Length: 180
Image 1 (cartoon, rainbow, N blue to C red):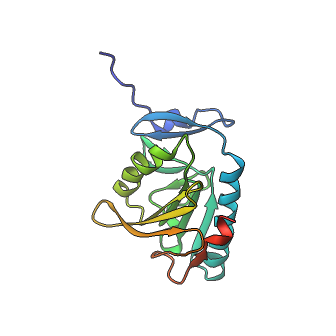
Image 2: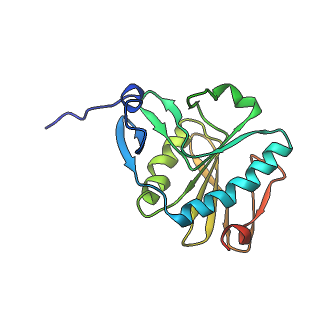
């Protein structure tokens, strides 16, 4: 039996810049370049989140690629990241070191299973307050809130419905504008 080699952030930092990787439980995984629909949905989610948080001075919203370093063996690049002013101390020039308030993953065939299971567990374990799973093909968004060390369903929103965020009080988004 071959022993599993556990990689660290130091190993991750040495990976080429022209390939996206994530490090989960010490295992390095390459991520394919996103497709057009993924990037279109990313933009349609980023803009209203940015305007809402910026206009109210709530914190910062950034899109991938941006490393979120949870531990020496857990580094991810969620599609969208919101860090509140109260947690701004986790933002560095190089990355985010700790749990953001809100993470968004846009599902793709190559990442959907990992986003729904491994990353969901990882985000809960490290204290991410709110997690959105955006399904481009079902035209839906699942909003999860952190309970006692695990996520609980806060809302399931489809095309034509208005998504609300428990973390961003007052934020609402007509998903018709996202999935048009």
